[in-house]
Image (cartoon, rainbow, N blue to C red):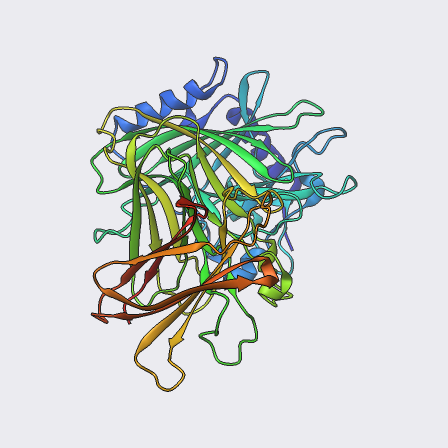
Length: 513
């Protein structure tokens, strides 16, 4: 239970609110009209000064708790911001605790002016955990949620979360939370260790009654980078976010990656790596899709490798890329608790030309599904110079019922097994790749040709294509051998008809044995 002395706490909170109404991030006043340039100016100023490492302000009573205990620190629904009648969005906040130990300053913009949301322990239900409210005064929030009438007109559903470092995630209608996005990735999968920039301040534009979109500004800071972000969010069947950013580097970095997506892949449609696991697949995403500027579609199935695996597609100004969840039937997973068939795909569509660079995919070995182990992002060929602004923008769509797919035959399933002949095991590896037709497909009965290639470490022993009536598609069956078991094999396959490519390009990395 919370014991809060009535008068002293009221005086303290009242004085705190009066002071904070006059202050913005880091004690700065925002007397002018607030917009993206206001945040960008602050990001530039931050980049010109040394990074100040924040210190944890969480008392031991909330720091030394596990994930389940932290989840019980619930924001009271009746305390939600913007919960007046006819407001299209409502806000609730995350309490600080566990490893969410740094405060995030959150403000609303009303009449072009910013004013803070003020923390109070009375806003939270601590359950059966005894806390000392005196130690929590002025503690602050660690993030926020946004609610709207997404699935039913008589209920406010949570659809958007900003919580931890620069992580955020969203869902559309009928979706469950799955993969996440980030503001920026620095030195991911590099030997020097990854740096995680953090959103330190948020400003949310108070929406007008009946508004269909929500505007959010964010200030980012880290040892080597600062940045200003604007998110224009439109919830719906696919929740869309228009993201604009301006980033400044304090110092050079090895890898500067924008529009990063983070997901989980434990195993796909095939044998489970865990004994007695009845599920058919466990993943938030099953493949990386890339559409190049010249219209080519690439598909790379995900894997849970034995060792760290980093691969990339070099291209110029891609039309889009994303981590996609294509299997949408309950029987594809058989998990009545996690419902992986409802996890969203996330599609990135640049709004400006990004120039030369690469879409990079990082796959990290994991023994179970509790941790994210997949990262995808764009790495510009020329990273920004320290002190110079780097602007980029893109649209991020959280999809399920209206997913981005190529207008070609597309890969519905990739399965790997032991490649044997009818009489003996000759050390081969078998792969089955199922291609499904686009929605506009008109069958003509013609058997397409399969064009398969391997890098120098692979030897293709056998290939064949046959009809797959269950999906009105085609199955490409391959059998191959590695020449060096300690090295991966890169494979590629497309379908052709009348010398024309009629499918997306299946690009598969067979990890080392």
